[in-house]
Length: 210
Image (cartoon, rainbow, N blue to C red; front, side):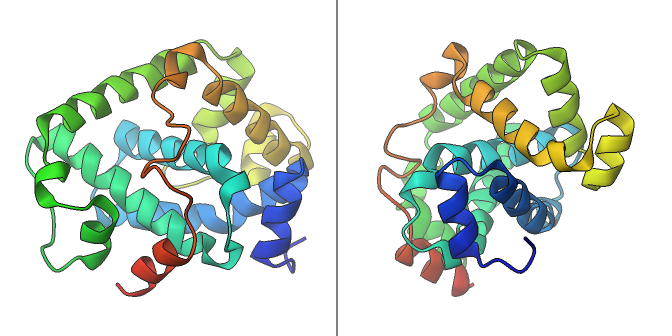
């Protein structure tokens, strides 16, 4: 499994192969957390960002046109969520004017700093927490362990929950889908994606240019 390309993994995960999803999470979680740490987020904020990023991937996995750009897309998406979370916490805009990825991903500075967007982000964060609270206890426990900082290995998570190591990734995928389908969260997950378009070449190029 670990030798499979991103293209193979995305294709398999899109067609319901939960072991492929598990490998995607295992492979790219360190990247997601490295971006989160670079923004000095920790605790509940880091967990919220991590959970949101993987929810986004579950939501848009079937829209992936260039799977080899997945790492770049995850980096850009994580960075975007970190900026939003930072604004909520400090009510300031912690941006780097030289950050081309940020500008390209969001459009204009005025749009990024819009109070309505901050309000929407706060509402979505609350909806995420309400939806999480409605999950079965087993899902809550599993997702909490998988969003710990520093990240736990699947073996460590399996040991704490008394589950086979091979079941962790597939179970996470099912729990994330239940979270995504929660009525409280559904209205905050845009059908067209976070930017209203499919991602692929442009997102990969933007991130690679940083």
